[in-house]
Amino acid sequence: MSERGLLLVVSAPSGAGKTTLCRLLIERLSFRFSVSHTTRPPRPGEVHGRDYYFVSRPEFESLVQEGAFLEWAEVHGHLYGTSVAEVERALSGEEDLLLDIDVQGASQVRRKLGAQAVFVFILPPSLEELERRLRSRGTEDEETLARRLARAREEIRFAPWFDYVVVNDEVERAFEDLAAIIRAERCRPARALP
Amino acid sequence: MSERGLLLVVSAPSGAGKTTLCRLLIERLSFRFSVSHTTRPPRPGEVHGRDYYFVSRPEFESLVQEGAFLEWAEVHGHLYGTSVAEVERALSGEEDLLLDIDVQGASQVRRKLGAQAVFVFILPPSLEELERRLRSRGTEDEETLARRLARAREEIRFAPWFDYVVVNDEVERAFEDLAAIIRAERCRPARALP
Image (cartoon, rainbow over all chains, first blue to last red; front, side, top):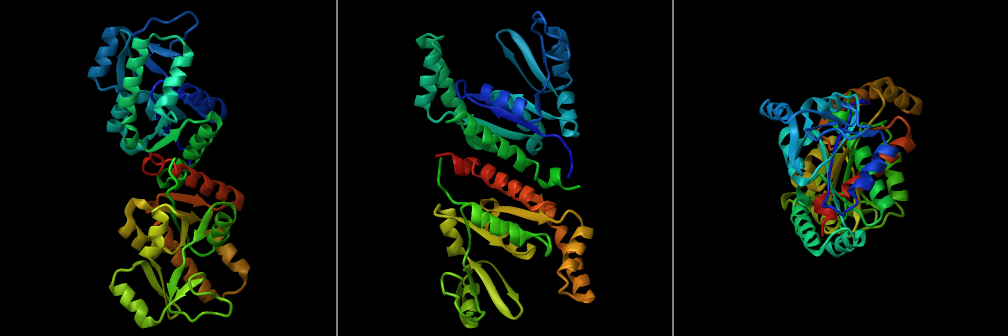
């Protein structure tokens, strides 16, 4: 069997437990996060090329012009993007990459890579449970909470377009779904046949 | 999550170990073989509706005319077929069905059901190993063996069209691939979303 790498794109509304599941994929399976480009200044201890590729806004914008990004977005005034070059390494077989991005980013990747990447949407068991989880954090006022829930409702509408949906009712069970998806995807003819 | 059933179509060249793997799917997971129609006379102990639907050749042929079969074939002078009605039960959610058919039959099912069924091709580790396995049975003369190997070589050319390929180098490992494929397929939006 071939050793070609897998590009796994994981999206979820906030509160669905995506961060925990991605951490488990990295700890237990062979995945690593792709290293993104950003215009955010490095924090103490962050290393260029390991945590991020730190670039200036003009540099980032010219990369956008060149079509160097698979997907990019502006978050809290800083630009973040995943370069095609970073991902090509995975597709050419060296590593398994994990992209933790929102549905907008996932749509950009789908447009550029089509079926070459595997798209998984993490769902909360219900919107009621999502609200309960967001409330239990206790960090947000009612307005922020209402905005997050409205956004979650919108994002969940994209779930039918993903290759797979994983209901995160229980972390270990959801992780086993993800592990099965990855194992199954390695059995795709394009990856499994010599 | 939904309880909709899965239709798994498994094909392989003879000697790839398909029969053993299908038996494990039935013993360990929720699958059962679909009950086929046949014009072969019942053997002692075989029950109509459990082992086969035993029908006359004219009955079978009129079912063919009505388009009642998902796939059918003539083997050693007898007709065998899988009825659409039998399979609709699985697709409507009552059971997980397993179809153990050759690549011609799989092509017929693909044509009728498209992506509703899941198609898995079982591969031997190599043609050399396939030949070794067929020889070790010791039941066939050189001519039959050569014919089987030529047919296997032809069938293997269809592998890239299947949804998944499972290399049966070791039965338990191959079974784990199948189990992962089934678990992943239950995470498809059409099956997992309410």
